[in-house]
Amino acid sequence: MRLGMEVIIPPGENRLVATLERVELGDDIAGTLHLRSSLARKGIIASLALVDPGFHGQLTISLFNGGEELFKMSRNGKFVQLVLHELSSKTNFMYSGKYQDSQGIVDSRP
Image 1 (cartoon, helix red, strand yellow):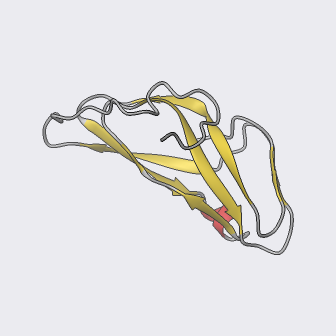
Image 2: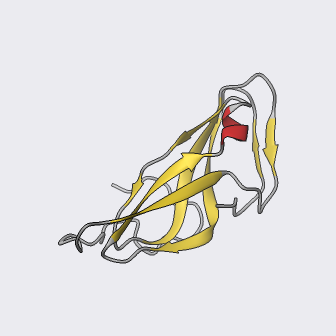
């Protein structure tokens, strides 16, 4: 997946970023996110989570620069991979939480 905007992260700081792509998962698909290894080699750490069946919207991800140099990446830069998992049966609990239909960066919602 690609960045929806340019990001600049000084060492020791974090930034919320959004994916350029919109995700739309059905009732029999879940996803897991993985940081691209090329970014991990630069000291970038990401807060990655399960993408629930039924979720639709852009994904907001926190990136932390644990490296010693300024991290810069342009809009459209590839930064995470979404691995899709077919469930053995349709879920009984489609995602309908507070982040449904997210657009752009979405801060934590109570």
